[in-house]
Image (cartoon, rainbow, N blue to C red; front, side, top):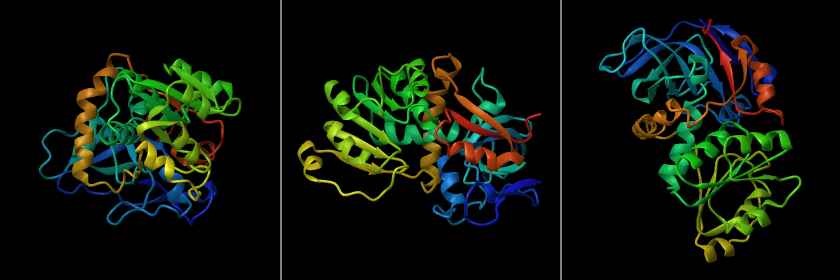
Length: 325
């Protein structure tokens, strides 16, 4: 089968096509013929050598897939050969075939194409586990989302609104801000034109903040937070080393957490999958949540997809199509 390998740590150009044997599913696993796979932030980090695959995981990139079940491992009863699905992988999605834990798979929501479904698992598992399981966002709270037009951001805006939160999104330029408005954000802040701290404070402060920027945003988030707020750090596009004053964290009783999904126990991911299927998939099927695919590339153009992902202008999810024709 064709796969995309990392020839050495570096830029997008280190992604190269190679041939490998088709893997075999172990007990509890499925072998899936991949229709498409998502391109995500952790893929960028692993390509650069900054986020190595955990022990026992595939060394190939690709944390989410959609496709057709080709074979089932011992003990799997829900899925059978010929079923179509999407799911969260432990790597291996940048390939024509991938093995995946059967309990981390979900049916393709009605009305969503098989290719577009590949962009659902990683962002929805990440957002649900951090914002709803972790920070326990509830109806009526104010949810501040940075990078609202990206894959994580578009998911946050829609899930926040669907479950009754007031959503404030930041992004720039206006074309990206308009995407946030179109998805239902209550307030959209162009961070190059307006101080988001003052804007959020004018709204009473944020109860939950999800940040992918880091750097100077960290201190600003603390200032924008309401008392007893929960701050979630998922990435550090502007840097991970900062000096901050801890006093406001104490005085406001803030909870500051970081998170990586890939190293979570398998049972935890199974619980997230069950929650998504019960509470979120019906909203997608009812048209209350949109699937936002920004761009697709063939598997052979993985380097171009990574370059697009790292550009300032990409919006929505970027996907690699594999066996989609």
